[in-house]
Length: 252
Image (tube, rainbow, N blue to C red; front, top):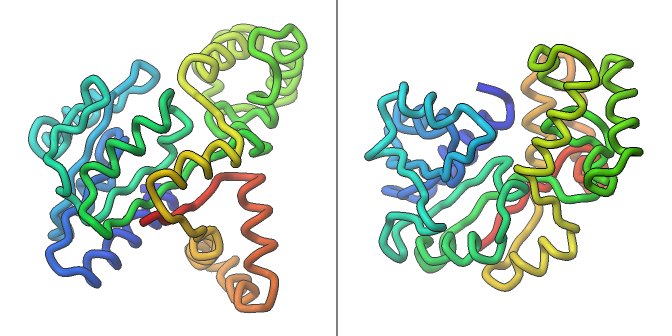
């Protein structure tokens, strides 16, 4: 389990300890890694995903044995749960794949109990590194532009980028990966994101908590976590993190 999922799981476990009997949903759960770990820890946690064609998560969820009852498929944008079903809904690197953010937030609000909590981790448009393909600024260019292709191809030639084994050449890789982000991602400005969330929730930001967890996760970096106790450092760290990675929002 990667460090981000471990932090989400830690958040879920702390939430469940504070609220006995809490019912939890991992929205956009993919293969269900957090769901499986939460179940193993005795939590009442479920998962849901639309399983878009850009990943192999459906097959992996099926192989886990959780798909069907514990992990359900979202159809026509509707979660197969009654109103006010959950105390906590989490989503990790999901909202940048959502075409209609308003509709998704409305549906999550529907299944949350009054006073329920929503944890969201996802990038805004102004993030520097496009995390899905690993090319900085690839999502800033106009879709289909020759300049974007040349830029992406050149950086791939220099060794940047993820999933390098999936294409026979740098040219094919650039074509495939740009097509992927065009088809499966929907980046929004922070203003758009905050406006959409503000219609349904009151939100606060938890990037310092997440940064502290990541630092402590590595022994050699753990001492630096203490810097986050100093004045102004959390605010500066959060601003940098949002530009380099993503937002960490807790909404109620």
